[in-house]
Length: 198
Image (tube, rainbow, N blue to C red; front, side, top):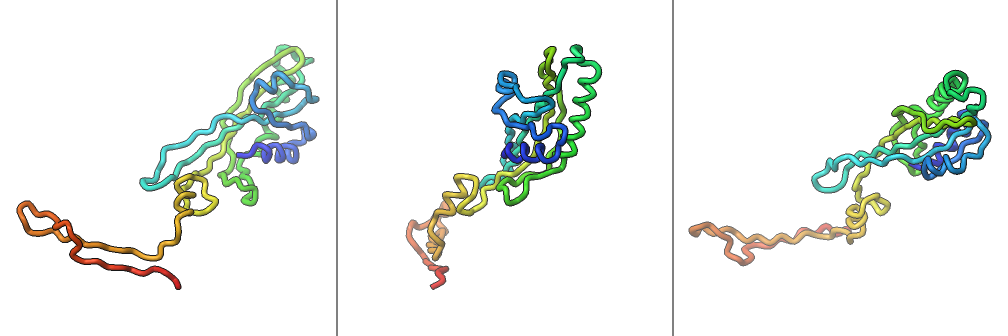
């Protein structure tokens, strides 16, 4: 899933951040460069899990994309993280849920996912100044080997590149009643099926 879409949704629908939502490649990048005013949020990619292939002749897999929203709040007045800081984290979680749970990227975005679901959350880091708490979400899509020029899989693209099927040639080599029964090795009958449209 394109995380830029998640960032846009949070900027538009999570008012407590006042637009202070950014992306990061990993939590370490957030920890090393956390300079936005608080409260703020960073959207980070998590795991990308592919399910078993359910097709015997092509590709049909369920893909689960995970992402985290690292919420950063001030911890200056609550160094033990017991009172106002955790209340703020709880309230921000409600905003994240309202902005993301059940939402799916629009069809014209190029991403075809089911609605986003919630996995859980946990404390990442706490200093005298700031508290980092990560909420985890996921969305499911499917990888299909559909025969189309813009298909996602190599097999589908290779099939789409084949020339049109204009006919079928059948060659019959009949089994003779010998001991043991076996084909003769020659063409006993042929048939051409013309599928051309011209």
